Image (cartoon, rainbow, N blue to C red; front, top):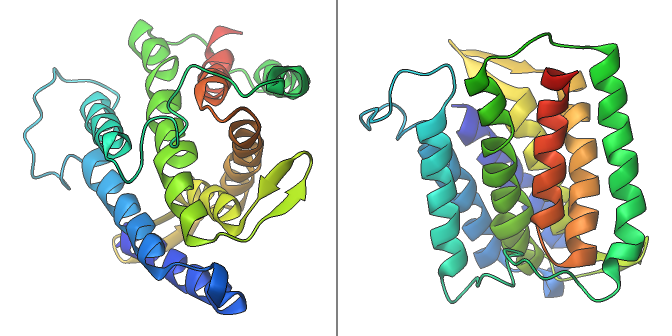
Length: 234
């Protein structure tokens, strides 16, 4: 129910934006983006519980994250996407690091401050290993990689802000990232946490800006995992 709600929001919001600029809108790529969101959720939930759990009992969803990551890598390998176009590359855009590194340092300082103010206490080795790897790898490659590419192709209009070319797809990818963490349906009840939405969607804007500037998800992966793990280390 939750993912159907998110998919409906994407279709409605995307369709409305498409009406504003029909020439710069591709319904086919919007439908691709919706399909990707549903497929990602299917993998994260182990086929909504239909797939057997092949990994040892754990406090964290290793199998779901790994399945979702493998699926994202497969999508990125398709000719319609491509590794470099999806941002899955080590190479950084020419001259981009000079402008990106100060922003990255501010990101690090912000999450370090949060960690000092709201320490979560000691973590188990498994928790630390998970937070240092899976969230950044799986979520950045999906949201700032293949999904961003699909949405950018759905909305081709651009406006240059802060040195990069923004489109509606970039903003929608941030909205979806926030909804993935803040919106849910459980036992017929809809829940939405505005604070969680802000704490995920706003940093997501920084991640998108970095990807648009560097043409790579490498730095966002590192920063994402840092933000998740620093509270466990301080």
